[in-house]
Image 1 (tube, rainbow, N blue to C red):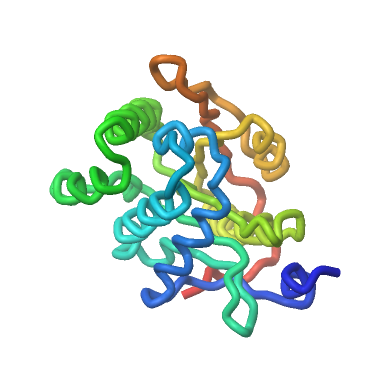
Image 2 (cartoon, helix red, strand yellow):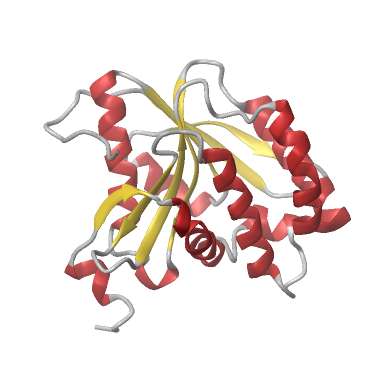
Length: 222
């Protein structure tokens, strides 16, 4: 087995991210989303793409930080990050107008003029499609490409969905790849609509999950 993939099979845990790990989490997600259709549409040129996507995910984490457990990790005991998920609890998925206004200059540096317009199109389309019913929102799930297929992303999703089931709460996400839809369907998500970007841009699949009977699982990480 490749040494880079060995830690995923030799043991890892699910925990909340620490503030000092923000850069490492952003780098992991940038690798995971390097070929994502929405990201490549917002950052069309390959030059510096991974660096710019990492900068975007640093901003996304700032939005999550005030929320308890907003950034979840699958990590080895030695500190290697294998996968990351950004979750928002019921009623907390949307950033405040003040935060969004303050973030505009940062997003402009990440995306540039053309990309910023496309990023605004993505945000507007997702906000318009977002359900009003209270729910947990999985805005981002990414696994290090070196450990994809080892089950770490599955473990991250299951950990929060077990919490949702215990509390009788719904969950929602958008899949930016058609190939990932069956992955989420395994957890009980179902496609509710397609979200199409303008001017021939990419398609996302909105997916909703009703709570299921709770199993004998432990509490979410603190």
